[in-house]
Length: 162
Image (cartoon, rainbow, N blue to C red):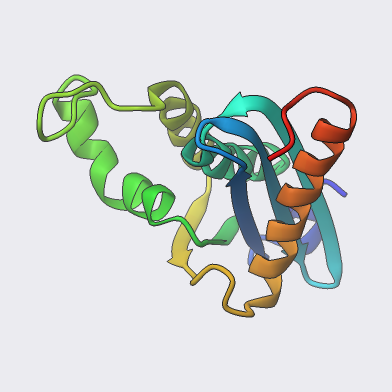
């Protein structure tokens, strides 16, 4: 499924759940995303042999937004305060300070933040934090996707089992 505002009408709202996971930090990591438009759903997932949890959290959101084929209204649900606060609060300050944090250190994952910023541009997105591992069905589902992606990676011999 490609998620398209034209197919669902301009008032369509996509719900997106995202999660990242890492076994070790750094270590093998995975991400999962769930896009819901009415009765239609699409899941996405992937893994990397050596990464961090924050990179996987960002990658999940990036992959979900890359799946959108037209500008939409979306509600993104993440259990990562790093992602929610980063995109909602910290990004303008990082850019104004030349991609430096408040304590003048380089912003970690700048490459992913820049990709995310570009992907957000055409959409109207509400960012929502949900508690992880608290029974939120969409969040539990993407957590499973992320961990299954790590399992598949490790099974193929592309990462250490932890």
